[in-house]
Length: 356
Image 1 (cartoon, rainbow, N blue to C red):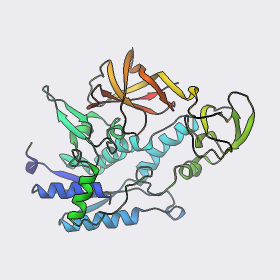
Image 2 (cartoon, one colour; image 1 turned 30 degrees about the horizontal axis):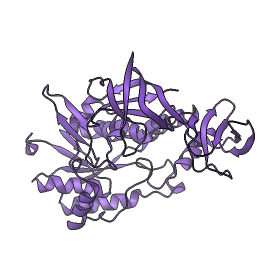
Image 3 (spheres, rainbow, N blue to C red; image 1 turned 180 degrees about the vertical axis):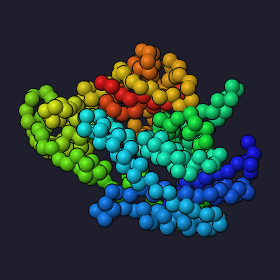
Image 4 (cartoon, helix red, strand yellow; image 1 turned 135 degrees about the horizontal axis):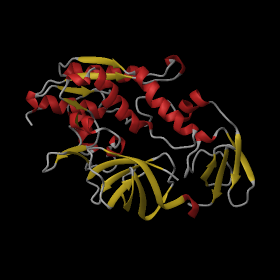
């Protein structure tokens, strides 16, 4: 592909990764247009938001390479789509992943509707790669950096979104990216990686949920004895497998199950109790990124970790599968995305939602 014939948009976030993306493209003699997607809390004065600093950093990097930067306001789309998805799931007692839906609905969705449709390629700072097979199909493939690999966050994007996606630093390790940023004196070189929800910066996840669902005090009960050992502020603040943030003495305690109607959290005492593990579980609404269904022997992730877990898939039809993991997995929770890879954890096929 001759990139010089392509019209390229770069999504600058103000972080190290997207800044090095711009450097890499300019180094190849390209002059892409840069865009900063603006998302803020509904009432910005209420929350400490880092978006002002992000925009300053993005502006500095675009200016350094004489590229124009445009701010695209996707505020309403984020709150109408990603927040609605998140709150609907947690209210139903499920474990959502806002970052996954943010990529599908905002970075490669709302942005595309507003400006991205004018471009051949949309470049982001994701740690992911792509490849074309012998039949001409484009695949989402993993990054060599297992800690930073972000294919799990991209496993719900559509085929047309993947067709336009470009990941210029996806073949690098994080250390390489930081070294480039320092060597080239890029403004965000020493910024720490974002740990918050996609676009929400320093906003605490529980504060985010509390803002929309409030609090609903309920009992915390020891699973084995039926004894009440404390209170929680709402089942939506807790997820299956959770170990920290319970505020209970004599720990560690693990969240084993939730009674959504009665608003009861059941916990078990001791380290990694057997009931917190699952080896066989169903997934539904499997989303194939490029239309190719996964093989029987796979690897998977149910959360953002460096490990790919070997398993076997049993096809139940209609986008439903039974996952048979090679070993018990800790903290399998309904609502989580089970991201499916080939046995060599190279190609990402897509993801389905866990049902229990």
